[in-house]
Length: 68
Image: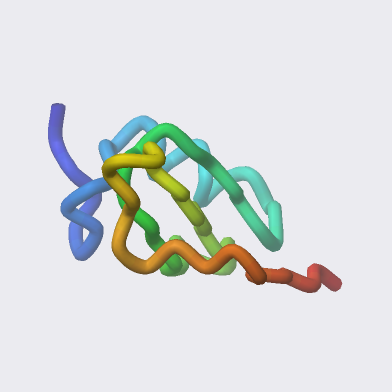
């Protein structure tokens, strides 16, 4: 499946869904890596902890996000 230009980890269908959602924030999981980027006006965020014996770089246990 093709990636969205400028976002190599985002597939085209997912990119269209996010871009067309009108959401200020799109939070997802199960990627095994942390991300924080924008698709159009939507902030896309994933703060993955990982497994106890395999933590994920970039995980922020105190992350708080304000919307609005």
